[in-house]
Image (cartoon, rainbow, N blue to C red; front, side, top):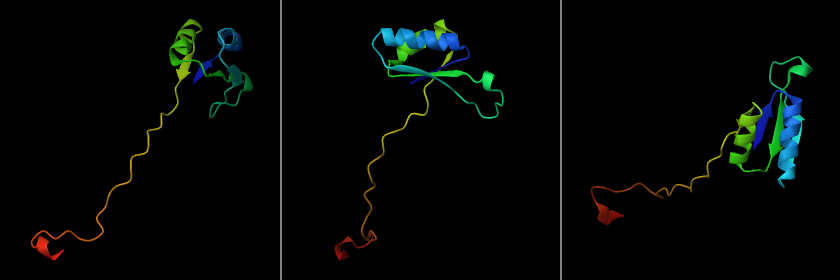
Length: 93
């Protein structure tokens, strides 16, 4: 899970809190598409903490939660017929 903050101090405070609670956490600069100013990039906090903990910290420090795209489990392969199905004369095959 990733939490995004515009202030470096907020990102560092969240990382410190998560590490104090026993979770892995790190802060890194998040480059946005079309943003040329290096100082304008937000900070991303990446952690293995539960989502509800990050939600509380995001609300406290004025950021947002980037849940990313959830991937669905692959569906089982389709069972296809080996030959055409006979409807009118099933006794032929």
